[in-house]
Length: 313
Image 1 (cartoon, helix red, strand yellow):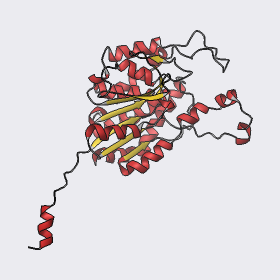
Image 2: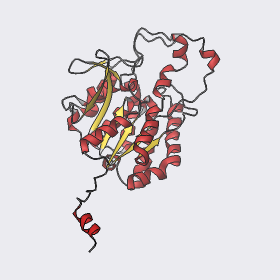
Image 3: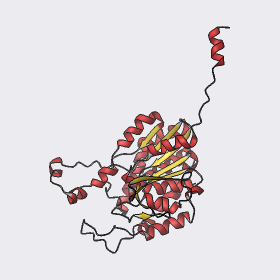
Image 4: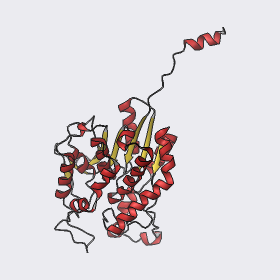
C-alpha cells in the first residue's frame, strides 16, 4: 500500500452539508400577485405545495404577507391568491377621508389601517410569529431609531404575525406608520431593500448551520419606462414624485446583482419589466389585475423549467 494512500485514509472525511431551500418575496403592492400565479404553476407541475418545497420564507411589504401565508398555515398558492381578490383588496385599500386624489401633496396617507388589520386578524388571529410551521422572516424600518428591523420566528418570537406583516407593509404615503406591540414605529421594509434575498440567505446559513443554501427570489416586476434626462434636471420634489422616484428606489436591482455574484447557481430570480402594467402599487382595477395575472403566466414560460430544475436538484 502506498504511503500517500495511508495518509489520505487518515484525513477526516468531509461531511456533506444538508441542502436548505428558501424562498424570498419582493414587495410591490398588487403586483405581488404575479409571483403567486407563478407559484401556482410550480405547484401544478411539481405536484408539491410551496409550503413543503421550501425550508424558510422571507418577504418584504406585500411579499411579507405572501411569505407569512405559506410559512404559517402551509396554504397552497391558489389559497394565498384569494387574499388578493377584489373583495379583500377593497377591504385593505380603505381610502382615507383626507385623501384628495386631485392633489399630489397629501396631508394624510392614502389608506386607513383598519381594513388591513382586520383582514390580517381574520387570517392570523392572535398567533405570534413563533407559531409558523416553517421559519419566517419579515423586514421593516424603525423610524425613531433610524435602523432596519428583522422580525423572525426564532429571534423575535413574541411579535404577532399581524404586527410583523403590518410593519413590513406600511408603505409611506400609502399606509400609516405602524406601531407594534413594543411601542416602536415601523414603516415598509422596502426602504431598506425591496428584494430581501440576501438577508434570507445570511439568516438561513446561521439558522440551519450550513453553507448549502438555495434561494428562489420572487420579484414584483420592474418599471423600465424611459425617463428623459433633460426634463429631470428641472424637477423639484413634486416633479420627482410625479415621475416615480419611489419606484426607482423599489425597482433597484443592485441586491439582485450582488446575490447572483455571492450565491451563484444556487440563486434563481423570477422577475421582468412591467410591460403595460400600471406602475402604481395600488391599481386594483380588473384590467390591471388581469395584466398582472398574465405576467405571472409569462414568468412561467420564461422560468418554469429552471424553477422545476431548481427545486429538484
